[in-house]
Length: 375
Image 1 (cartoon, rainbow, N blue to C red):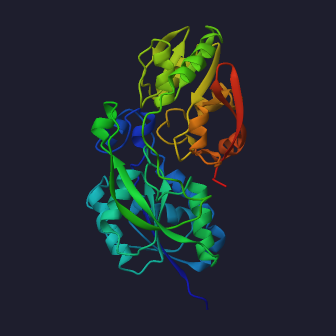
Image 2 (image 1 turned 30 degrees about the vertical axis):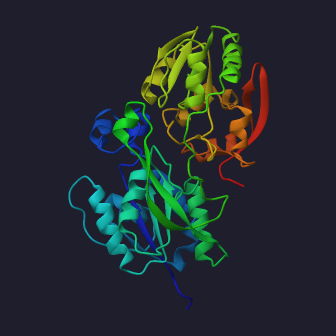
Image 3 (image 1 turned 90 degrees about the vertical axis):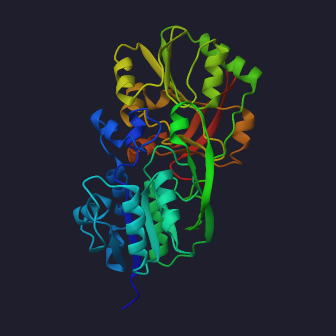
């Protein structure tokens, strides 16, 4: 009998709660997000990853955390597994992640698979043994660390390659995190916390986010002028980022760097809106378009810091009306890699795959490829 692949699994069930609530993260605000009616999505995102492993279940020996931190989902999907440790209370904490990660590693796992955001990556970094191979399933709001797959499906497919013995390069990636208190006040302060060993396949694993505010003033002025000439009937949903903030500033409007703003008839009718507020504003919109930017270096246009623009929002506006704004210099930072989409809806991600319209100057558009995974 061949050797079973020993897989560890930890889920942060509170990851991503702050996204649709426009709270810029989930650290310390999970109760607030739940009180606002936000539904946890981490289980669903991990489910997408694990479905890629269902054909390989007989080749897996899985060690996981109790309840919503892993065992409940594995039981639902029919995976045999061994539950490790106990939870400290009704609501999971960072301490649970670190303690359970240590206990699972003690079972000699070949790969520790975890789901969350940068805060969860920090917890894993704090508890990872030297050389322990890990991989993150992106489920958080802010994901600057390079230890995550580009989306849940890619995570599952990469694990499948390891299980079946395919040749996969191994490497190390940075763990980075933002000060969420400063982040909610519009300040981006990132810090390097360490490195983790990961399976390194370029089309499956995301790049570390490149920070910095790029303001090519003349180009943004030109793009802003083009938007204003589109007419007052259009409702513009402006995703977060320095490029869209620069466009609003060029129009004399005070937007938000890290939130989603809504523009109509030359005025901001919503600043830093939640997903629910955005849905409400769309109900009386004659015509709407979504304008997102690509994260420098990574290329994500959906699913990283703009979860307010949810699948139902995109479908209501129309896939064809989701536009990307990017200066040519920003496109160059992608080095030919495609835009990445990770909306949480596999069908929508596939619909968005292909050539996307990019606003790059005054009445100037380019076509640039988008995909659910890097290539």
